[in-house]
Length: 88
Length: 187
Image 1 (cartoon, chains in turn cyan, purple):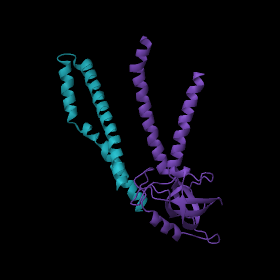
Image 2: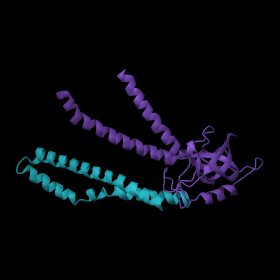
Image 3: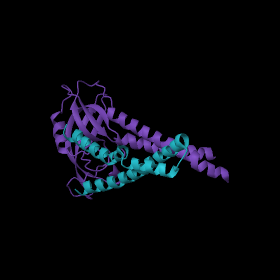
Image 4: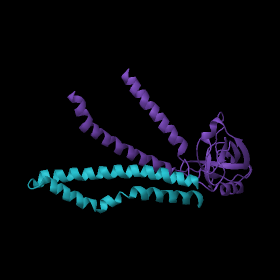
């Protein structure tokens, strides 16, 4: 079981790097989109408050939770491979 | 000069990545199984081409017994496969059923006069100079020696890797154009 522990540890570290990078990237894309929206369509009032509200809405959105798939998809994939390699 | 260095660098990268994928991705051979056997292997320099499965047995031992499948390809060439657990390690086939596969392969042995053709899914290379063998992943009976098996798994993996590379590459180019080139131009 030491090998399984090693795999899980490596997987956890690697996927965490991907998860954090993807989270930061996705949030920055959303920020750019909000800033562009304010510049092109609204153009009045507090720009920073508009972006902040938009990002807070993003923080509780489904889109952000979908990034957790970074952990879930590989685990499902491993389960599928184990099934097809050993039980078919 | 710079031109040649640059292209040599990319050529080396492509060769390394290409041979890595060629070794790791699954392929199918249509063969007739001649025999299966277990023999002791003392591996040395070629040890990275042998599995290090760590599935309950002791590890770090310089020799062990390995299952083999001896076969004849439909082209008439000889082929020898090893049959080893990959366990939780690399490559990620998660194969734990070596003994069962040995049983199945033994069950499908056939003679030249009365051949039974099987498809062996395997990864790895056969190389006589290094004494390395591809690892058999599964055996299944097929109609005849001329069956063509389309490697959907390898095609999908290459497709996904290609998409990933394109996504990263295009973002990197955009990042370089927006952030790095202006800095260099400024100097």
